[in-house]
Amino acid sequence: MHAPDRDQDLRCMRRAIGLAALCPPVAGAYSVGAVIVAEDGTELAAGYSREADPREHAEEAALAKLPAGDPRLATATIYSSLEPCSQRSADRTPCTQRILQAGIPRVVIAWREPPLFVADCVGVEQLAEAGVDVVELPELAEAARDANSHLGLS
Image 1 (tube, rainbow, N blue to C red):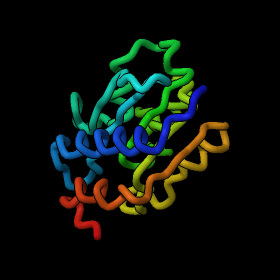
Image 2: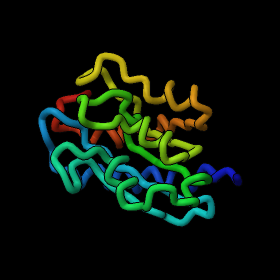
Image 3: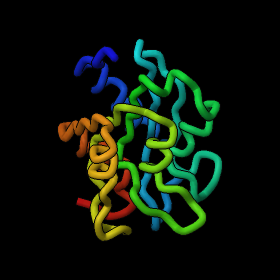
């Protein structure tokens, strides 16, 4: 698998952050954008929180636009403006589990999930333990937080 360059990572994350701005703001939820990019840099799918359902997460929305078992996912990267969730209510699959089930080998995030709704999100740790290459772009964390100004985060 060829590694994306830093410019591509920044460009794709800016797109994910732009998608987060499209989320209908809700007091009890983050606004997140996600973009799935093929090994050659082609965008495969994109989504944002609450795009089609009030409980939908960005990674969930993007993955739902691709067929299960799509062979391109085996060499893809998913860009998420916020760390993928590691736990959800009993009837919803956490995004870390969805990413692992899809077989995506690389995840790029801008911002770690703060302990606002979940005391200890361990999405990054779960992905890394499963062998996923996790890259954090802290220089874009502030832009990702800005899409969540409705939550009163500093």
